[in-house]
Image (cartoon, rainbow, N blue to C red):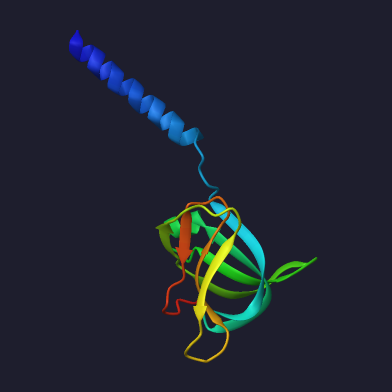
Length: 136
């Protein structure tokens, strides 16, 4: 009798835990944000200044494809040219209130900055940019 109670309790725990995960705060499988880069920023092998669109796709990541795409963005028209696509380097971080990017000074060329990481608002996963160019 006691073993039935233990097994029943464990089964109910698994059911409730699965339901909680299924209905919990899961981030969408595809996220995007548009920002304006005021400083010339090296993304992959291209310097960009102005509006750009960042897109991260978990489904592409799961298939082993480049999960991040950065595109030029024309206000009123939408995305145009793809600047860089790559496999991000995910890490856990404090979820920001707004989309954020992290850059470092571009010491190799003496001007502008280099994109190091980005993170979507409310998402505890930050996305690192690989140092080697994995452009696609």
